[in-house]
Amino acid sequence: MDISARTVFIAGGTSGIGLELAHRFAAAGSTVVAGGRQRDALQRLEKEGLGGVEIDVTDAVSVDRARDEVLAKHPGLDTVVTMSGVMMYEDLRDPAHFETAKTTVDTNLLGTIRVIDAFTPHLIARGGGTIITVSSGIGFLPFPLMATYAASKAGVHAYSEALRAQLDGTDVEVAELVPPAVATLPEHAQRNPHALGLTEFADEVMSLLATNPTPHEILVKGVLMHRWAERDGTYADLVAQRSQALSMLPGR
Image (tube, rainbow, N blue to C red; front, side):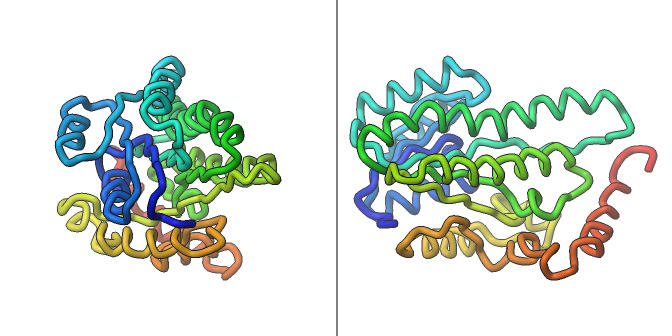
């Protein structure tokens, strides 16, 4: 895809990977509107020259309101990125984890669907565009400490595949961004020395997005071991290694 001269809405674009991609699209020449829940973060972005709109992807009314606001200002919108997500630990031996599971699914999977549903009719009506979903390497190689996060991201992958098939012939393309662990803050790198640096990650992502045709899956080098673990016969060993993190849970 041509990453310049696009009009991009990023739900979840006020921090972390979403914020970095907002800056990268803007630097490439695109118009960017970042969506998020924190008004102070949105105000900072507007001072930087980026657009901002308040959105809570767990609330259908909020999503529709954000869509209407974005399209009123940017009727030529052609790219939607569904970046919003939460990542939380769970102890599946404790039934109290269910509240965490509900929040995770409502944000990561249903939030993705709400945003897509809100903007897909516009993209079809304008004759084309791009939807970029965001799954995770954990959706392909589970991290047992975050069971529902893994399940929600696996769901985003499956939904992206189905969405692409259903939109075939509309000129609306679907690209799935599959991040590995990314150090969006300095303390993240301290906790996980294997995490990819945010700048390095964004460099690869924008390079892959700029290829033509747009890849169905945006796979940086650091996520390939996750994506192809089953194919390569490393899945069981890697899940066992990652299961060692369960010792972090109380009583384990």
